[in-house]
Image (cartoon, rainbow, N blue to C red; front, side, top):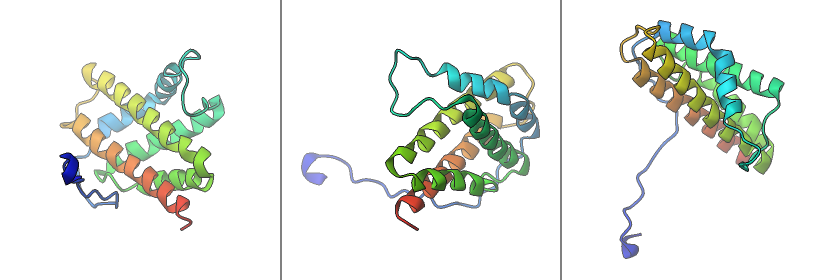
Length: 161
């Protein structure tokens, strides 16, 4: 790396970390109430004219995934512990990893769900429905933890563990 002038890669661990964040019950309530809007945002992100690396999930499959993802996120926001519900996200990643290469769609799906949840949170905060201090920052910490858990589960299954 040094020979081509590139910086050395930083070490990064996706191990769960025990961190506390301010509890955000009003954001959690708003996101729970907006589960259908999260699904609509994800579906709106697919366009038949734009190819994607994964298949568009079916309605029932997407509803299950969105419900699980929102539960993980809102549970962590209510408890103030971003990794409290990461086990559920890790299981989703593990299931994807067991499917081999085509199971990588779980990583893409969770990224799209995270983007949709963040969009709904921005709308809820802008509308004044959310009164929690540091709500967006806390949500980002929770999403980081959930995404890391999905990747961790996927990696474990891919390695045959």
